[in-house]
Image 1: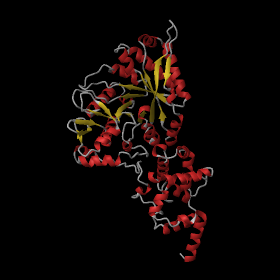
Image 2: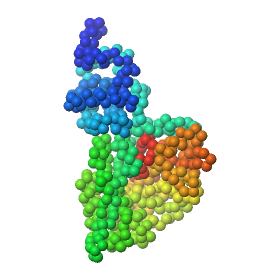
Image 3: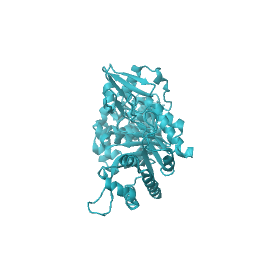
Image 4: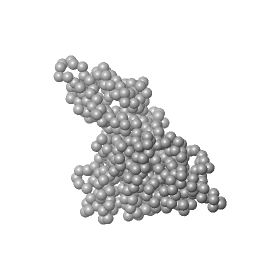
Length: 523
């Protein structure tokens, strides 16, 4: 290449994009265009400058788009999407970013602008400019290096989607305890926003207002889930002191509805289904009798639920009613409950909505039937509901044990599978309850443990993390008598493999705000 041609190309680049871009070395490029949280102000300024001019240009060049996202012009489309999400999260208000900016850049139309820029063939002018930039930055910014994804920034979000997940030999001592501790402490904040690794029909995640980090997990990692269930609503009695006055179901919790959040989830995964939970609670005895005996009251109640779901563009609901009424009536209302479930499911299906029913485990710690359900009841339920969420956690034993011992979980799932005459139909409707929380088993009573406490104790150099082969869970030993059972990626993967082995419909996670971010990497 002649010196005249190079000078001409450099002049063209300086005129088109400004000479300030030509002499950036690797360090400065990372600082200016990277997406490290510490330099989010620089990124914010760059985005603001665009929005002050009326938003991103509809025909942005590949080179300019690459600079804004902090990637190379040759970056592949899937990594462009990842970089875009990283920029959005880096500027989220929770990370010290601008609420205005977060609201502006979290728009699908902006992502499409970047995707178009990287999809278009580069013009001769752009190729020349890219070559000049390569020469001036010692080729750092030119070509994609799959082994150097860290150049996108040391960000707390999954940077790659490891499909070859480690085997579970490490659960049995191949990986040392200290190594596993270090792995967790270094990786626990990483949120994997890529595609699903768990190939089941259903991955449902519950989100609770009291563990509100789950809102962000559901939004940013939306591709990991088929169903999201915000725990918003309660079904309460709206009785009247006047004798013979009509009884209604009062739906409370509507103030928690967040349409913007639901829109954000669907932007990141257009196929996800929003299925809020309704909890049946606070019914006086007389009102409960009226509810159970009156088909008209039941019909009004389900009509109100369906209208609320349709009005808010939701896809179905989790109706938590079986356990509550069975407890209130001491198991005497089975036939009434079955008729309610069958009737309500039909109303849901007429409206194109899914009906999901939570159910307590059928077997206790001694593997004996609890009486909450039996095989005949299960046959009728399975023929009505879309999914049965078996809450296989909160294992109750006088002995120190895990939250959801593996063999106990498997036995309960097998019980429900065997309860139907149609094996295939029943198994694909069953969702395994998967806990993202732990328990402190140190005292006489168990105390729930969430991610913050687990990490605090894990960070103590004297604590010991080991695998309990009896329960298939990790336990954290600390102090003189302290012991915590808390899920790890490995124990979660073990249960995901069980779901696949049994051929069930999938898993239902309680809840997304209680776990470690990096749990998403195995989902």
